[in-house]
Every structure is written in structure tokens, then in C-alpha cells.
Image 1 (cartoon, rainbow, N blue to C red):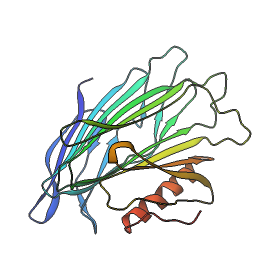
Image 2: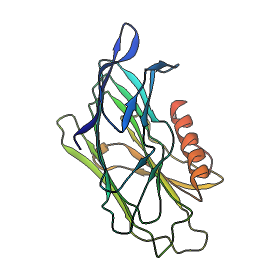
Image 3: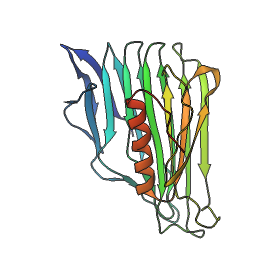
Image 4: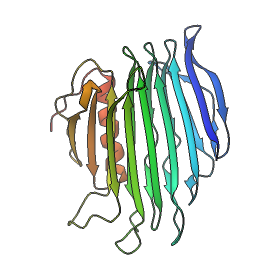
Amino acid sequence: MTQALDLVLARVGGRTVLTRRRYRWPLLVGRVFDDDRGGVLTVQNAAGTLIPGDVIRQSIAVVDGGVATVRGQGATTISGTPTGAEAFEDTRLDVDATGELWYSPAPRIVTPRARYRQELRVAVEPGGRAVVVDAVVLHPECGDADFGSYASTVEVRGPERQLLAVDAQSLDAMPTARRAPSAFGTVYLIGLDDAPTEVGSRDAYSAVTELPNGAGWAVRIAARDGGALRAALDDVLSVVRSGGLTVAG
């Protein structure tokens, strides 16, 4: 599949608006709504699922003073079949020196026999800011015998597109520990002024990792289920929006 989404958001006349809006099936894009920070845009997957063999390529840029929150309409399931190919999402995020992007798609739900892989590249110029969420939930019906695979690679790149950090994770079997978490998320903080020190949640495990080469920080979360993961992600984003990241554990 060719490019499914190509968006540019910028500040025009005091508001963050879409200056480029190109999309095709299965993605749909509505209007940009205003909030107290800037513009809010919801990207919808019309099918509500990714099926074996799907290739979804996306590009989102925030420039010229734009402040944008880009989110999904709800959880997207990854469907699987016994011999199905993997579903693949390739996402490119670019923020110039005057832009700010909050990218928070809903967690992907990996169902039995589903195979899913994503690659996400974030390029932020000095002065720009990006907060990026990567989250996945293992469906309750997944078991040792019918689990497929999940892999995610996130790259952080500098103003000359030089590679600053790579964060990769993969899972090809169900966790076997008793009461093991089944929902996982990472919030990447790029271009923030202050280093986060501590995060915590009653229903989730969390920790902060400093990314190499001054690229930023990653807040990692493991939760018992999708509901607890969403609550923990919301807590982290709320604290970041308030101007810090120091939460009692």
C-alpha cells in the first residue's frame, strides 16, 4: 500500500490548522478542534482493525509554531490467521524548531495468531518538542499455543536526520510468570527542558529511562490489562502537560 496519511499542521492566523491533508483507506481525518494548548486532530481507522498483510504508511509534520495533539479514535485490533502475513505500520513524525506534537494513538490490541510490526521515526529540531506514545495490549484470549508476534522499533533523529537513539522491543511468546502484565506502553519525551525523576501508578509498573545522545527520556509502563495501561498513560501525559514529571510511586 502507498502512503495512507500525509499531514502537515502549522499555526495560521493564531490557530493550528492543517496545511496539508492527504489520506486514503483505511484512514480517515476530520477537522482540527481547538483546546487550551493548540489543535486536536483525530485519525480514524475506518476498518477498526489491521488484517494480515496490511501496510500502513503515515507521515505527520508540525511546523511554523503549530501545537498539535494527534490521537486515534479508539483501540485498533490486529487480526490474525494461522498462516497470515504480518501487519506493518510505518510512521514518520517531524517537528521543526517552533513546533510541538503530542502523538497518542490508541493501544494496538494483538489478538490470537496476529503478527504485528511497527517502525516509528521521530525527528525533532532543537527548540521543538514531541511527546510520543507507543502502546500494545495482548488480547485475553491469546495463549502460548496461538500467540503470533509483536515488534516495535522507535528511532529518534536530530535536525540533520542523524540517528540519536533506537528503542526496540519484541515479543514472540506469551509472558509465563504468574499474573504477568499483558499491556505495555512507552511515552517518549523529546525536547523537554527538565528531566523526569520518578513516576508511579497503583495499578501499573513504571520507570524512566534516559535516551542516549541527549535525545530525551522514555517513560515505560507495564500494566495488568488495557484499562490500567490507559489510566497510567493518561496520568503520565497529564503530569507532562502540567509542566513536570515527578509522581509519587
